[in-house]
Length: 392
Ligand code: CAA
Image (cartoon, rainbow, N blue to C red; front, top):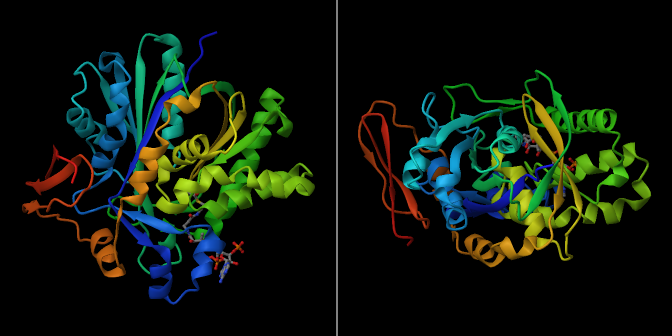
């Protein structure tokens, strides 16, 4: 059987960061509500010359040093916060990264679930075309109504990974439980920048989808809770995973071991706690955080990974951590990336995140603010123009 999985993974985020204590003060909310109630401390904010394309290109750039570009014949770009109703954001990335012209590019959307669909499609594709690699980029900016209770659960990031038959980090396993239902827990009509969300209902829907996926995986593959060493969750805010896992433990009468089993989730929270929600990228930011921050060697551990996209599709899939995985991580670089973000105040944050969209085709140039190596230079005649730049 062909082994398929993740060969390399990296992430990028916005150049700015907002401390959620500042947001709490501004909204007249107790600081602990965000820190303890939601499990969040900071939120990445994109600069005016950053968007899902620049973050996606930055996340994927370093992967190209370890893979033969000519083998990448498919780029799947998953996003909820698409920048065009027609053209795939991945095409801009394809150009910025100078990828081969014989590479198909397509965008996938199902709220926060898109990258998991991309991963499953890529895995099946690689089994038929083992000589190729699939580049997956998940990139999103989470935006809700200002001053709503969802505001502290915003954030932005892109995660990029290479899927192929020489996995170095995790190998994908066949078992997977799936759940789809037409519900309105979170949605964003085409004319809106900010998502609508029925927050409390969405949290219930997440847990319902998880339990349904669990039943599906159990029925189809006969798996038991004990088959998994560790769980890794989609992280709209880290407390969501704690609640979801608590429910699974309760369902399996494992509450007496709850403290230890919940502690097991902690390493997967490190990055999301400081970045916030990044929709389609969030499950994979959690996975990367787990690989880079677990104090013990995870070699051989069976993971159950839960991906949830409102609307809704849930998938609980399985993977095994491979021997030597830590040699392929970039932990120090990621630490620096998070530490080097520029702290901004509430005023700048609101200005950036809720900047009016240019709709009349007039030219809008962006000053050079990003700390990254790609920038969204301007918009002119309804066309977005990007460029590679020297990191500041
Ligand atoms: N100290 C400690 N904890 C405090 C506190 C304090 N001073 N004040 C309040 N809290 C706790 C509350 O007790 C509550 O904890 P429990 O949930 O454990 O009871 C927690 O803080 C949240 O407080 P509220 O119940 O008052 O909730 P809220 O009105 O602030 O809304 C939310 C929370 C619904 C998550 C809202 O932030 C939201 O709508 N977020 C966006 C939607 C979302 O992320 N949904 C997740 C599932 S959908 C999904 O996963 C897809 C996706 O990415 C969007």
